[in-house]
Amino acid sequence: MNTVGNPHAIIWLSAQALMGVFDTLIVNGSWQNARTTAKGISIPSFELVTPCHKATLNQKGISMSWTVLALLGAAIISIANISDKTVIHRYAKHPLTLPLLIGMGGTISGITFFIIAGIPDGATIETSGAALVSGAFWGFSGVIMTRVLFNQEVSRTIPVTQSSPIFAALLSMVFLDEDISRLQWGGIVFTVLGSILLSLRIRNVGTIFLDRSFYFLMLSALTFAIGNIIGKYVLDELPILYTHGLRMLGLGGAFLIFSLRTASWTEVKEFYLSRSPALFFVGINEFITANVALLLLLSALSKGPAALVIALMGTRSLFVFIYSTVITLIWQGSLGEQLSPKTVLVKVISVAIIVAGIAAIAI
Image 1 (cartoon, one colour):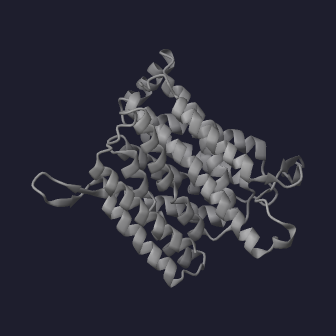
Image 2: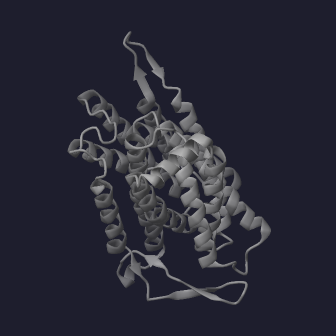
Image 3: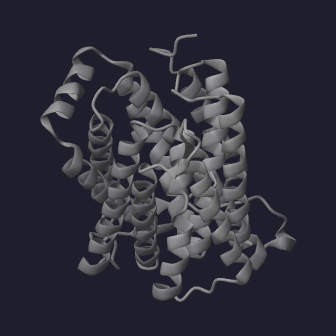
């Protein structure tokens, strides 16, 4: 079946992921802990917790809440990655078109959340600026990833960027004074090995070399880790919604700076004039899927250790592999994925190694 104009696969995945959020998370009460802005306006907020018996509501139960939030965020953000690849493979002709659309959507989302949240009492120029910088690092990481994604398979690209727990563990030890156990360091090594294996190529002459995109993806992973470490610092001082709004502004600004060019802007205008389905994909992705996922991940980051939360974010490599494989089996050629026995075997082994490393990091 041709996927042009047929976004059912992405819609179905989004619906399933969002249903999972509401099935797993419970609104504790109705509206609690209203936050008071600098202007005295109360903004209601709610607390998401996992269902558990009253007798087990202890420190372990609290730690499970950020674990579930991080895994749900990873599952949903991977849908955004699949949607991005659909736009790149089926509609976009220029590598900067999708980043430009993401920048536009991120900026609008940032302004919206900033207005909804208001400026909290504890906000300072330092913390607010740090939130913007955190989003900018995320944006720079995303620009690199989407640029590589334009020419590479999604299930080979995303897992390599999940090597960010390596950098996050090192940075969190230095700047956040977090402890890393031997088992977790072993997990870091597994993550690196899995990432390298996923980027290996075998030439016709039988020699093995490391694809050039690997180094760009590692830079993307580093900037992603830096953005999250700064985000953890910010979340200790600022509310989640306000932080999310500023981070989206920083993210959107970074995308716009690197992607606003004549060719990309011309193609975006063509999408609008022709009512291209690409706008539907990007709209659902940027205004719903990405915001839900990033809010879940920020909630997890505010509750748990940065190194471990970022490690759990890396499980999206598994979700991307599952989603892309299922979609390709149903709609062959829809994502430009190769499903020969050899490539599937390499992907399965690589993702398994990465996930095993992430599991060891999170223990």
